[in-house]
Length: 250
Image 1 (cartoon, rainbow, N blue to C red):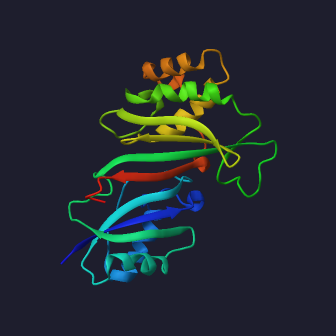
Image 2 (cartoon, rainbow, N blue to C red):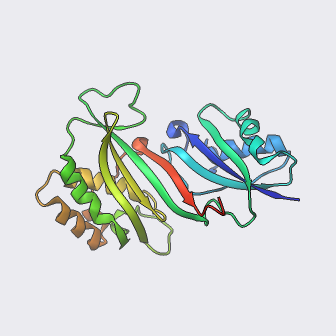
């Protein structure tokens, strides 16, 4: 009888063309499903909580799959890790109820973005954080960040070609803070549009040093015009941080 298995995984997105399987491209989903094929002897499809783009990392990504296998849920972690490349790791695995969906059962998704202030980027963090010569004042960064909290139409921060039927999303929190020498931007919401977070970050970094930054950010959001927003921040500083589910489901 088929069982549903939930995985929590982490990956370094540097050498991946994102999560989703693509022809002739190295992807996280592709590597994971190759490992599952070796375990099961047949193709096993995975469903993820939130697809990540090329170069984006993950600290607590979640996916699920169905398998008619005798492998105990908690043993999948060790079994899959033995078949994965080093830039992807399964952090935990367990069997969950059949109604659980990594994507549709998610109540909240959160991301973090790392920025460092430096003249010469460290060779050890150049692939994992955006480097700036000077950081805007934290007060003004958060004036901008607060503007996206709530239910809004995020068309102004959506990349062309996003297939979503509606651009309305709910954001629970949005803030900047210092941690371990990095400026961290953390955002939590129900779901996100294609390149939405990186567009928000790029716009905030360009808007915060200007006069009346909060009002400018609000005007950009309400305009629904992508040309009014700033550039899209590089993928390398973005991390899929975690997903929250109902305790009874996941």
